[in-house]
Amino acid sequence: MLRSILGVVLGYLVIGVLVFGTLTGLYLAIGADKAFEPGTYDVSMLWIVASTALGLLAAVVGGFVCAKISRSQRAAFALVAVVIVLGVLGAASQGMVAKPDPGLRTGDVPNMDAMMKAETPAWVAWSNPVIGTLGVLIGARLGKRRRS
Image (tube, rainbow, N blue to C red; front, top):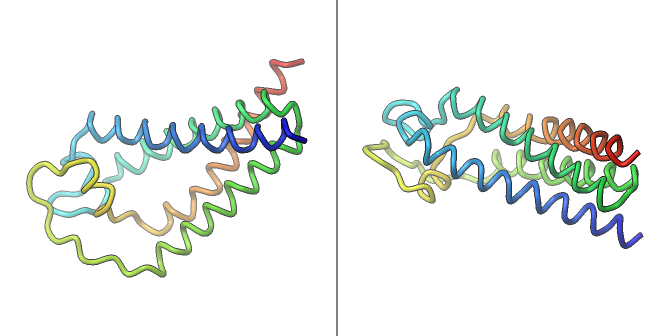
């Protein structure tokens, strides 16, 4: 039981750390002009595609870690449940919380400002739990396969 809980917690932490780290790296690599549409804080299609791929990769690694630590298929399903619940709550809250108008984007934008002011389409937020679920299941399957 303790292994399962530890697997779920560490799997989710791995996902969070990888998402934050890789998205920070992506932003630093491509810059504000490619991360956002011209003059706005609306994220670009390049950002959406790249961040989706990085999110999927993070979920695969998180699922793999969960499977390796827990040695349990149930723990992987518990991690999926966590990803779905937190993803749906995040997507739902995006529409409920009124963000102040970020104004026009001019010049370089520091990473923290970009995170706070970014305008992501609602469909992207709603797709994250699905992508996370797929990634965790793939990673858990890979973790199980290597153990056998």
